[in-house]
Length: 300
Image 1 (cartoon, rainbow, N blue to C red):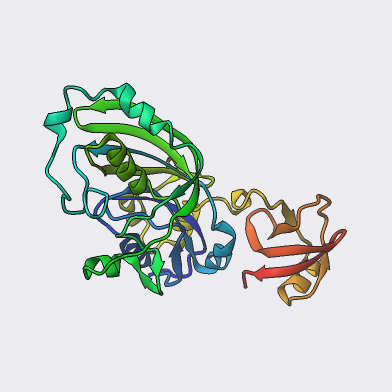
Image 2: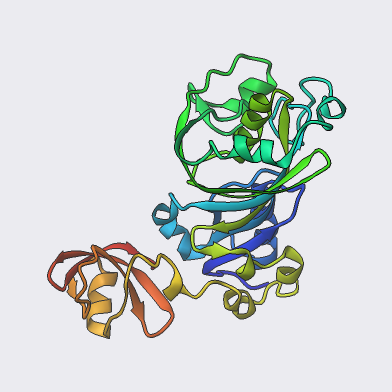
């Protein structure tokens, strides 16, 4: 069994698994213990789940606030306690009573309010901390959950079709925003209740579904470090806001030891990715002045 797989891998998460289940599965496939995911996906959701493996987990802090895009469906007619399809119905199904009069245009009119900067209530069943405890633990114990609204930004929200009681949509929302909350609020505004019935993440920051690998695909490379690393995103394309710079052996030696070094990088960027050759990422360095840099992350 191989070990020590380093890189960022984009997984197409299947439904019915938690994000942590995916991490566990990947540990078995790669033999690498140190794996962390960037941005949880709910069990029912599928799609883009970026995972940092090995030394690349040291870069996690730089990925925090990326925008996420989704395609999915909202089921009109009743709300659930979790605001998605995993939960218990909170009321009886009103779809038959509203179906004759509810139009696609009416749904679009309500959806058009969800644009730009907004205050959003997180769902009671969520990982948001309330007094140090995750909200879902309080909700499951039947305790009152007092969540505070959070600021989110919705860049696009397109209502594509109304198929019976289901509304198909595409959405791009800032990090930390809940798609379930939007589904719930649409149901409240329409007066019929609604919940998120299907969700697929198509993009997380720069990572898209086109470069995502299924667990079945990864399974075929079990224990093969080279094959697994070849499926990872090329390190030069990671963190595109940071320019890439190749360093000579002398500078690399200094940076690896935590000392400052001059690098041939003449932009005004504060942080740069430092490489030995084309694809060996050595770390992240911070510009001190001119072309003098101080290492802030060393991959080891």
